[in-house]
Length: 231
Image 1 (cartoon, rainbow, N blue to C red):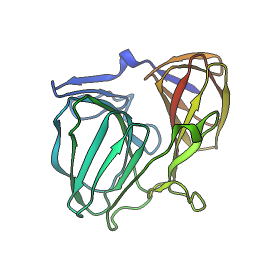
Image 2: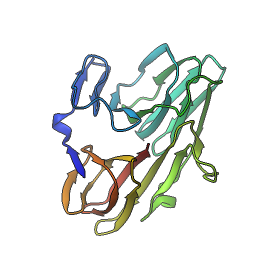
Image 3: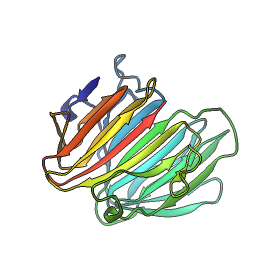
Image 4: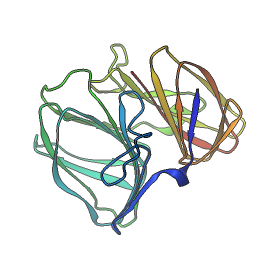
């Protein structure tokens, strides 16, 4: 099954400093038909104004993945971690049994990002944070695992969920395939460009929910794709 979620149908909250689109129910946006996709609970498409951000706030029992599309985000947390994650790179935070963090755009340009929350396989545990660069050239014409909860994905950032976060960059006309196992759920969003999923046209920042089966993803424009495959 292919469930297309056009960008214009997403939840929307404009706070001035933060312009957010919600693929799934979040905060004041509530849609009983869009409560999540398998263990994928949140996929927010955020635009953060320069010199603004999220002050310190708590999380627990959630795997939080941030994919920066443009600009950069600067992170601080109650574990003593600090870091700046730039465009195309990824940070992850396993909230575990509780952590406080703040995220700010200290740049002189807007920052755009996807923030993805995935339910962990078990509750509790010691929280952790990590970030690393993922050069877009390394993802040319293929999916690369950016974050993973599976053994053997040694080059990916670790998360505590039965899930993988994948990224690919495709030139116009290039294709990749992705197979979703029985009982699993995949959700993909083109960060930029335009694609077709088994012939269905998908614009930049549209969402696509996938269930069991193999799909062919073809770029109709130069595109950058983020895909999460979860239980």
